[in-house]
Image (cartoon, rainbow, N blue to C red; front, side):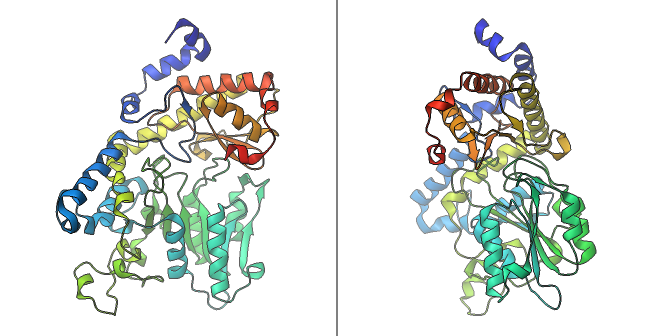
Length: 428
C-alpha cells in the first residue's frame, strides 16, 4: 500500500487489519479485482473451499454415477443430515434438529403447514411490519388455506418507518390468540438485531409457537435456539454462509417437536431405513430430516461442505467479534466524514442490537448506490431510501471500510449521484 493510500484509509485501519486474527481467511476467497465488496449480506463472495467441495461432488457424479448416492467421501443420500450437523453449532442446536434442504420459502411453507394449527381462540399469525416479502406471502397463503381472512387473523407489529422494531410491542402482541409468530433475528433493511431469547420466552409464556428467520444472521453470529426453546427456524446459506447463489437453505425444528408429522411430506421425509420400502404410507424420519420434501439438490448443497468447515475453522464467536468491529468502525467513520451530507444511520449503534450490516438512509439512496458501483464499491439498495453496506468478516477489511466511507463522502460532496437517472431499477 502506498503512502497516499495510507493517508486515505488512515493508519488506524492499517493497524486494525494488521492485528486481525481472521485476516488469513481473506486469501480463501476469490476477491473481485479492483473492487470493494460490501454486499456480503446479500450474496457472499466465492469461497475457495466451497468451490473445491463442489468440484469433489461433481467428480463423484462424473466417476460414480448413481453410486454417488451411497458411495464416495460425501454420500448424497445422507448429505442433508450431515450438513445439518455441521450447521447446528452455529445455531446453538443439536445435530438432529437441523437439516439442509430446499429454499427459505419452501422451508417456511413447511413450518407453516406443520405447525400452524388454528383452534379455538388461537387462530392468528404474528409477523412484523417490515418482514421480508417471502415471509408475508407465505403467512398470508396459509391463513387463506385455512379459510382465515388476513385482515382479521394476521397480526402485524408496526415498526418505526419500516426500519426499527419495538421489542416491547412484539412481546405485548403475543397473547392467547396467537398460534404462531414468524419473526427475524436481524431486520433485513436496517440490521437491527432482536433479543430473540426474550421473544422466545414471551411466546412460551402465552402458548404461541415461534419460528425465527435467520437469513441475515446465519454464519455471522452465534444463536442459542435449542436452549432458548425456539420452536422452529429457517435460514439461507448464501449470505454470510458463502454457499453460492441459490445454495440450499436450512431448517431447524426443536427436539420437543420432532415426531410431529410434516405438513408437506415427500419421499425424503422418510426414515432412511424405510425409504426404499416404497410403501405409500410414510414412516417419517425422527430428526429434522423429516421436514425435507423432495430429492435434495445435491449440487447446490455441495459447496456448503467447504463453506461450513470454513466457518467452523474461523470460529463463530471470532466471526461475530470481527463483524462488530468492522461495523463499529464504519459507524465511527460515517460520523466523522458524512455529517451534514444528508445521511442518517438506521442501524442500531449498540453492539448487542446490531447485526452484520450498516444501513444508511439518504433521499438519493438509489442514485448513490449506482455511483458507488461505478466507483467499484458494491453496495446494496433497499427501497425507498436505504444504502446497505456489509463488510463481511471472513474477507472484509478495515481499510476497505475506510475507503468506502471516503468514496461515499466524495460522491455526496461532489453530488456525483445527480449524473444518474433517479430510477431504482438501475441498482437492481
